[in-house]
Image (cartoon, rainbow, N blue to C red; front, side, top):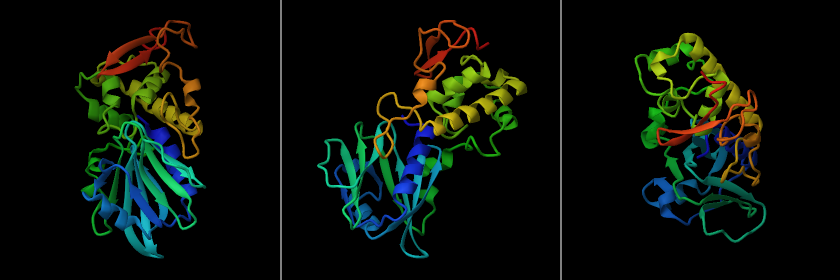
Length: 282
């Protein structure tokens, strides 16, 4: 599933590509791709004629502002890529692949296409008279953004106090921290020198400070590399993310650690593969 760096990469691509994009036509090829309104036809009608403005990212959600006339808000276009959702930008007509779920065109015939192999991705149209969180209810359950002032060691200590949940499991909880998933939890714990199995409530403030710094640093590095591609993720141009080649432990189970030479272990925590180095993480 795309995590914060991948979603941020898509956000930047959408903002750049759609800066002057006015939606002329919308086609929904798979109804389940539209979470709201319940009728996909109403989704299409709401977006047709709208200009797409700036894009925001909240956790793994993408939120695009819509307008019909300058200064006339037309709601919010929400997107969650889930496991395999991705956007494609096409300057010329091209037949859709079998996994194409939603297509949007401008008056020039340029197309923004949403492709999703597993079909878990979702889109919403939020009317301008409704709060975004009232329609996209998952937003209200998210913890702070990793780059926000609210995310610090003191916050982690207060939220994790007394918890016996392994710290790797805690980092996957979007209610604790928005946007971090399996890849960057493994990488941040390695960078901070913390065993993923460690009960989260037993980490010292110094360890939590190291972890907070590591999370921010790893995410910044991956955003700079355009995210990670191990299977499905691509940006709007179809380009792979490059962070995978920089990973210290993720998907390197059985390989020697690049820092100390110890064999990287691959365990299972919270139903997810967890990669760590017994030599570097204590």
